[in-house]
Length: 146
Image (cartoon, rainbow, N blue to C red; front, side):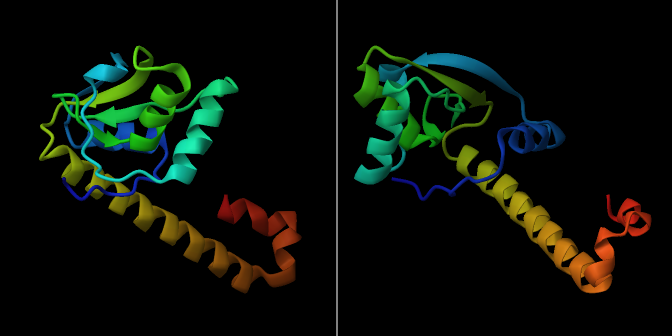
């Protein structure tokens, strides 16, 4: 089994980065039995959470799969859907036009970019708070940081 990146980047960020990288992708609906896992172990706690989401009617974001149908991100969501609705359930996915060996690397690069952006935003917020202090509530200064 392959080591997979833990993806926390939002869906739109991922899709925009795929486009910037010139990697085509498309939304698909896949029968659960057609998916191939790459992750060896699942957390029983996470699995129960996602099973609950499915049985209570929550709309979950799509999983990400390689062009061969390997799950790159979303093992717990897919497993929760199967446990909650059965093996015939259908799962929304974004199919990345990469093979299962390349797709985790691509998603890892995108996640690294997300972490850099998030850290920069956190640093900017801390800097704003340090620079502005109590004055950050002054509308004259707020326009600069928007």
